[in-house]
Length: 231
Image (cartoon, rainbow, N blue to C red; front, side, top):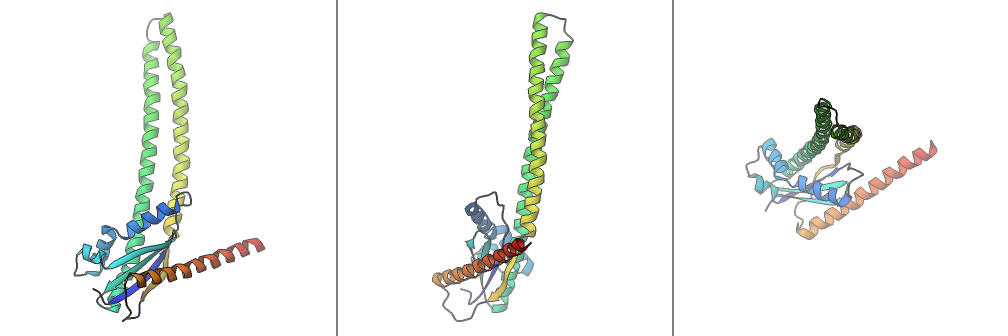
């Protein structure tokens, strides 16, 4: 097993509308993904497979805003370099993931608007066809029914368009904030060599980092709140 270890952490900005537990699960899954590991292997030119590199690092999340990487390597310098590459690869991959999710949501909304437009067009076409028929009681009744359907379909189209515009604006702002607000919290640091590094050790390191990170977040929020109160 690798004899040298390095640790690093990333501070994340999440979607305030989403469940924190779900976001922790997603962020950890992204950090442990084949895609992130493959980026690091390629970037550093590591002479190991993606699966073996995945086995060389662990990911923990002491809070919904923090992801901690612990990396093992053959040397202290290598461990630090791999930890730094993990930070970069993870943040980039997460940004791509968030942008892709945004695009998927916009595509779904655009399809709903398109279907609503098609419905309005179809009813207008039917009205034109029925209007060309000889006047009769049944023809007038059919026209009346179609016009009611047209009002309903037009209202549905307007609602879909308004919903899309509002959702797209909100989603784009949220995604941009999540990407820009996520950054490296603690730069990669080599752990003292020669310590026993079992699961209990990693748990202790994670808990310690979580405590420190929690204190930093509390202090920053307190300072911001104090400044706002003074204003």
